[in-house]
Amino acid sequence: PQTTQPGAQPVSVPPLQNAQAVQHAQEVGQLKADQQVKQLINLMFDKGIFYAVGVAKNMDPYTMDEFHHALVDKLFEEMVKRNIISQM
Image (cartoon, rainbow, N blue to C red):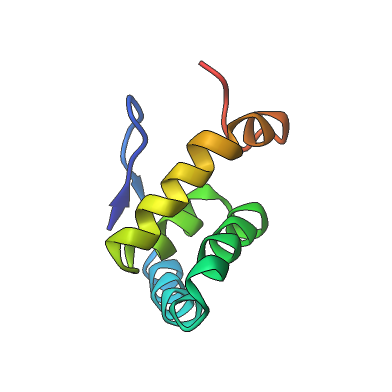
């Protein structure tokens, strides 16, 4: 599978990492809804944004959307500060 950012070249996700993302999605999916996005955010800071998005993509659309909102609305400045993403 490939993960892309707007304007960026596709990035291949290694099969082992993809299998781990599927496993993490199953584990996170067992949590209460309000805890799922928090866990995805923790994964982003621990394993990187591509991994966390890979996990979220293996979950239900609502959780993926809530994760997206958290990243864009609440965590953008923090991600820039930590050099997780660059400000354009």
